[in-house]
Length: 209
Image 1 (spheres, rainbow, N blue to C red):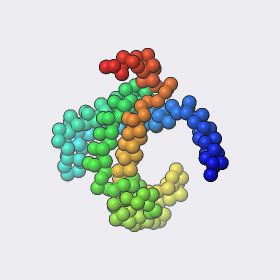
Image 2 (image 1 turned 180 degrees about the vertical axis):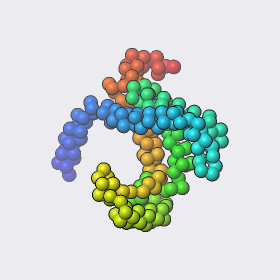
Image 3 (image 1 turned 60 degrees about the vertical axis):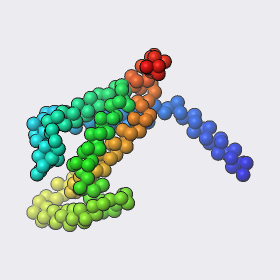
Image 4 (image 1 turned 45 degrees about the vertical axis):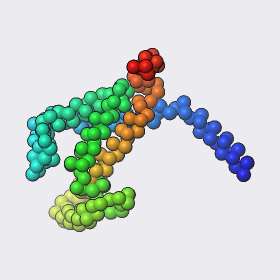
C-alpha cells in the first residue's frame, strides 16, 4: 500500500510542475468567449430597433418589460464584456452581467425548447426535457431530406455540412454561463491579462480598499 502511495505522490508532483502554465486555462476561456459576445453585441447594436421589438413583443418575441432598456443593457454587457475578456481587465466583474444575460436568454428565449441546441437522436445529457421536439425534428428532417433528394441538388446542398434542424435549446447559453462562472472564480489568469499586472503593482492597495 505504501508503494502505491509513493507512486501516486511521484505522479502528483509531476502534475504540480504544470502549474506554471495554469494561466492557459483562463486565457483559452477568454479567447473563446470574447468573439462570441462581441458578435452578439454588435449584431444587436446594428439592429437595435428590431432587437428591442423582439425583446418586447409577447406574440413572436420574448415579451420582456422595458425592451429598449433591456436591449441596451444586453448590448453593453456583451460588447463591454467582450473587450474586458479579450484584454483580461475587470474579468470577474464583467462576468457578472454576462452571466445574467445568459441566464435571461436561457429562461426567456430557449427554455421551452429544452436542453439540446440541435435535435440529437442520441441524447448527450440525461436531463433533456423536450424529447418530443427531438422526435418531431427527426420526422421533419427526414421529410426535408426526401424532398431535397427528389427535387433538389442534395449532394451540392450538403457539401459544406449535413442538413439539420435547429432545436434551439438552452445548451449554448448554459455552456457559456458555466465558462463565465469559472472565470468569475478564477479571474483572468496570470501573465496574459491586465488584471494580473494591475494586481502585481497595486495588489496591496486593492486588498486594503
